[in-house]
Length: 488
Image (cartoon, rainbow, N blue to C red; front, side, top):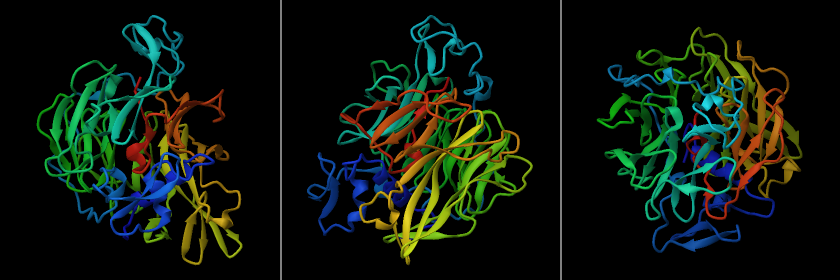
């Protein structure tokens, strides 16, 4: 299946790199290199983390990573509904800006008394008048798909839905006191968008709306004043957290992201690139950006927008899948200019071919001073590409399948400063804490949190790992499965 962007292939493949040294797989997506299974069977990851054939009787349980991903299908990018925009409801930009309070009055340790989160030390939230560890939300599986939350510093996770109810895509709201997620038919057209209070309390979640004939995916909320999601494969809808009628914000596009004021937003549309709406105006192309731009990300302080693009139109074939060779850029939201290249694709000769790489999973530090991303390495022999980390990728040598990097960025110009810092091998989906003091990522199907030096971009102390004894964290849908931090 050939598409402009094949996220199922790209991030399904990245889970291969996330397995442990002795593991062949974490979930069924790691087994895709086994090829097409015989009719009536599928490749599955067994309890020994090995790929095995399994008979489809009954059909396999729903899994979000196996169908066409939002943004992977044909998206005309022919404009948006100018009459409806994401600017609805109370402006979330009046709250304390996540990422701007780091170091300002953060003196109260965990368990200490507080009246506001700004009094609490890094990684903490003022909850019931005491400073408590921030929550992180991810999508995992325990045999069924689950939206789950955890205190970042304490191993162990809690499902947001009942045991018999599938759920996915948890997203915190502004202020950090609510979390939204999709429950029920999470891969189909009848899923429900639901909200629960944080910290979790007994009782059923409040259902705001349903898919109404389309799948709810690529959902985003904080810092937005409404919850936004992609309808199936293209087009963005929104709804206030208090409920009401869902509104079509755009007729096309995917990967929505909110600006720090909760009103501005950006998204990408196939063939049209990055689109931006400022102050409630109709979206328009990001000046100076290529039409191949996708996955825009705001930070909370600077005017720079982060995005991936494939301006050269280069693609690579992983079996039958065609994947773009993406690079990472920054560009001011207003004013245009030439994009700053933060991480380029690479190519180096090896015996019989080349060792190459592309960029995936970018994310800002809240203040825009760092960007985290994943560099995925693969060998190219003729036209056949094999991801490194796979046992058949013999020309890769000791090169890891993927490496999580940090790159320092000039907060005024958006240009890179100094060399990229190699942070962690075989890790993916990096996510900075709202105070910029910790980095969460997924490795070997496990949520991992590492304190970092925000000046040097290096590790501080030992990582905190949430074992996959109950839940294996999913990575198959890329940014949709990136860990989300509770905002401060």
